[in-house]
Amino acid sequence: MGKGNRNRNDRYEDVYSMSGAGAAVNKTPRAAAKKDNTTTILITVIAVLLLASLAIFIFSSSGIVERSTVYVSSENFEVTGTMLPYYENLAYSSTFEQYYMLYYNYVYQGDAAQAYTAVANMMSGYTLNDFFDSAIATSKEMVALAEEAVKNGVKLDDEELASIETTLKNSSAASLGRGVKKKDLRAALELQALASKYAKTVDEDIKNTATKEDILAFVNENKADFYKIDALKFVFSLKAADYADDGVAYATAEKLVDLYAAKLLGTTTPADYKKVLIEYVVERDFDKLMDENKGTLEAPDAELAKSVKAALAENLFQTVVNGEIFVSSVTDNATYAETVEKVASKLLATCTSTIGNLTVTESYTVAADDEILSWLSNEETKENETKMKAESTDSEYSKTVYMVTKPMYLDERETKDVAHILIKAEEKATDEVKAAAKEKADKVLAEYLAGEKTLDAFKKLAETYNEDSGSVYEGVYPGQMVKAFEEWCFDEARVEGDTGIVQTEFGYHIMYFIGDGEVVYYNNAMASYADEKYSDLIKDLTKEHVVLNDKAIAKKTSETVPPETTKAPETTEAAA
Image (cartoon, rainbow, N blue to C red; front, side, top):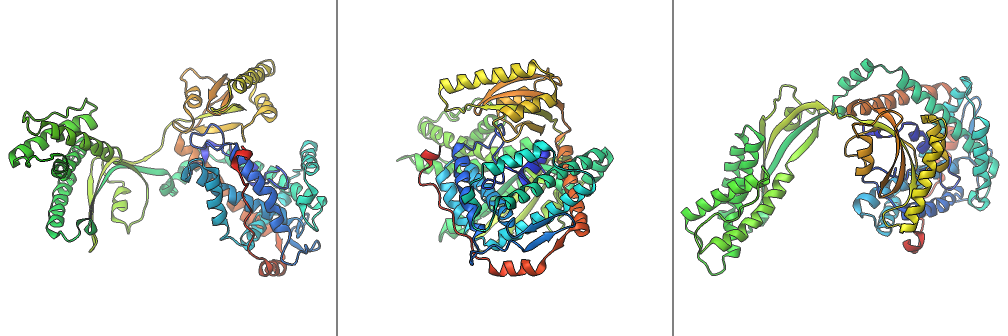
């Protein structure tokens, strides 16, 4: 799921990219996507990797490439031993890039050196067999598609062939390795390009022939992929290790958990659920915080403590849940007023965090062996129903209480289809760079407005000027894009064919509004439906057209050795 945010043709540009012998797969993040803030460092590091990694697959342990060996074939096509290194490199570079972007964006928050080192270490666990197997799988698919393309009269046009020649012209002979000639790379690129072209045709045919009834039926057959349930969830958890040898304190804490878990289970609205939870936090933490902050004061008597806790819980609820201004002064007792205010501010932070982390969205599931998930996914489960799951071991005691806030539903948020042309000028760019980018964006838009003013015309300009990895975004949903980009897309006054320029942290986007898209779940379902149909077709075409040289494949597999770890650039500053 989640593929509706991209033009599906871009998927085939990823899988069958023709960016050159040393840079086969382009998975650079699309610029306007909110979380994919990959910088020039990423692109440069990956470029260095790709140029170096090709050699890994060209030199086997013996250093000999058997030009005459055909691994995959059909009536009109074959993949030889001198074409395979290119496809092996596709697999290697694609794997590295995907993990690199994951680590770069989400684990190391933009630290290129750390991300590179982590992924390089992880990649050392792969062997050449892994990438050889992937190359064979890719070759099978491409040969099947290319054979079917010939059968249906699809072939590469002059422009596509010229693009391949340009790629070949720009390829370094040294990067091709011993035994591999440009004619081998040409054959690999032509097969790749034809497969890509026909794959797009197949995908378009699947989408164009799918009816709304087909997609809705697919959704109902695959509820686990599309239905969601929103719930509040809180885990009462005690760890025996936290109480050392104090069995009395552990037993007291356990009784408190039992009491408030039962109260939480008995709530009937989200507000009540949150109120009880705040009361639990106050009851659990108040005495400890008072003890830590009271200095030389005696502990307040039970009646005073009880009234203060009740008042605090109410004020915290009104602030955290209802948004009112927090009142930390809850007692007239001058002796404890200052200490209580200190405790109140700490409880406010705890309650804010606790309530803020409550809401969860569970994917629909039919896992009957899991009591809670089975209950959540039951169509008879109603809004505001609660359920508890208790677990206990020698080292931990826990009770988890759920409240369903939105029973099974489909994501029906509206989406928009747009195209853009990015002129890069990132946030840290100088004023001069930004001004030049804005001037260029103005000129590109003026060129569009002076022409045919159609989507095709806009796409044509994108081929020349766009500095992003793709131009069309289909199924843009709320929260997906950076703010300015999204606001332009979802402007209520927006009509088909609208254009404009939007500035974001990535630069200037010349925008084109294609129109309203389908709702989120429908886009996701269409993407999954097309993937499934496509996979089924590939299986059939492979059986019909493809012949494997099992003996050669087995021999090659037995000879391969672990790949070297490509050395990272010495500095990332230079790469930037």
